[in-house]
Length: 318
Image 1 (tube, rainbow, N blue to C red):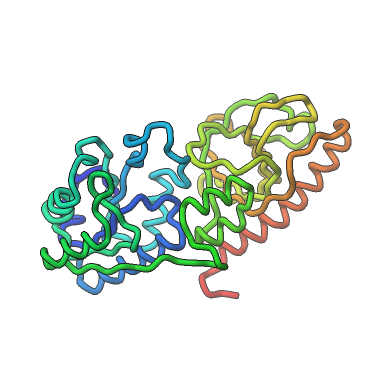
Image 2 (image 1 turned 135 degrees about the vertical axis):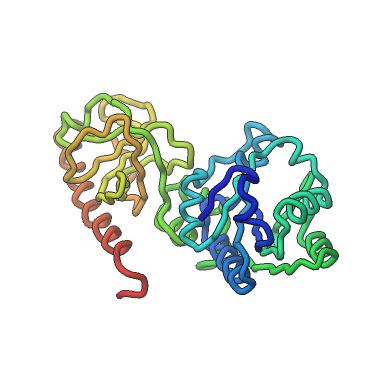
C-alpha cells in the first residue's frame, strides 16, 4: 500500500474509488466499508483509496475537546493495508480545508485532485464547512459528475451499533475483550519504555514502564495482554493505575513480559489487551501482593498464550 501525507504521488490514487473518513480504530463498520471499496476498485481495475485526516478536524474546530484516538496514523495504516487497500492519503488538516463548502470540497478534492471514478461511504458521512454536506448532497454531486456511489450500512454486533465512540467507552471501562469484538481485532497501544522505581524487579516480577502513549488507555486494573516487541509476540501481564500498597498514587502503565529477560529501556513496545483480570487493590503487605501477582501472571500466561496461538492460526483453521 502507498502511504502518503497529502497529494504526493498522483499515479497511486487518481481515477480510483475513494472512501473518506477518520477511520479511528478501523473497526468492523470501517472494515465492511473498506472491503466494499476494494471490491469496487478491483472490479473497475482502478486503485482503492482511503482518504483520512491528521489531526482530527475537531482538534482545530473545538480545541481541547478532541477525544483520545483509538489508533495512531501508523497503526491505522497497518490495519487498512491488511484489508487490501492500494493507497492511503493522510491529509494534513488545516483551516483552509475546513473552510471549503461541500461543493468546493467535492470539486477540489474528489473531482480535481483524486479524479475519482466512484465513492464508497457510510450513511452518516458529512463533509464541507460546518459539516453541511450529507449523504443526500453527496448523491446529488456524484450524480451530476457521473460518479458511482455505494452506501454501506452501519454494522451492529450483539445488539450494539459499532462506532468508535462505543469502542472508546468500552476500553475506558476495561471491557477490552468486548471492544475487540467491535473492532474486529484486539486493541493495541504503543509507547516508549522508560525507567521506573524498579519496584517490580524487587518483587521478582520486572516491569517495563510505558510512556508517551497517544491513544486511549484502559481503566485501572490488571490485564492479560500480548507484548509486541519488533516481530515478537509475547505473553504479558499489564498493570494500569497506581500502586496503593506502596502509597504510590501516580497512574502508570507497567508491562511484565512473561519469561522475557533483556534491556527494554528506550525501546518502542506495543501492547494488545486480551482480558481484564481484576481491579486495582491495596494489599496488607508485600507477601500477599507477591502471591496475587503470581496468580495474575499465571492467568495472564494462559490467556495470552492462547490468544497468540489463535492469531497465528491460518484463517479458517479450527
